[in-house]
Length: 101
Image (cartoon, rainbow, N blue to C red; front, top):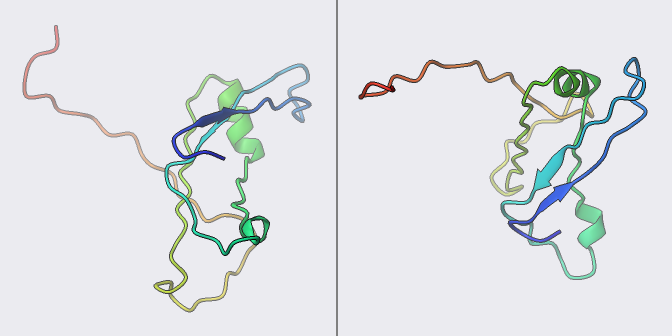
């Protein structure tokens, strides 16, 4: 995958949404510096959950940002689950300094 490029996928056969399709995109913002010849050992998993698909089908905008930590700086903690850690970002009211007419 190229840095800065946007890759679009097509997801079909969505459970409980027969005939629906969604088109998620992936954008690579930076890269990993893997050892030569071992690029496939360091794949970046992207989980698209059933909830993400339902939100997209309902017309909601779903964004997922995946941060990869530097293993030299990572805390020495064992992962409890194999799924990605995530949190919900709440909507915020933006206060503009000028009237928006």
